[in-house]
Amino acid sequence: MAAPALQHAALITAASTALYAVAITAAAVTAVAARTADRRRDAREVLKVLVRRSAR
Image 1: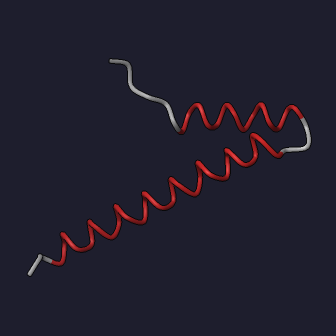
Image 2: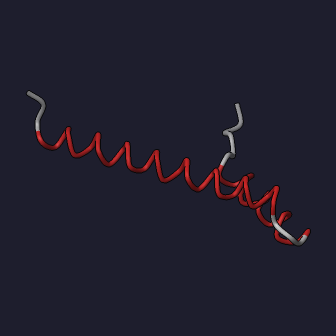
């Protein structure tokens, strides 16, 4: 049986991943559906930050 600390770590990781997915989805929907160009532009900037890839 796994140690309780490992179970909690797995739960925290899963919750963090779900929260990140919700943030990405909300920013993407806003980038497409916002009423003003400024809000769409801001949402695209947020997406750039959230989905930033490391330089290789």
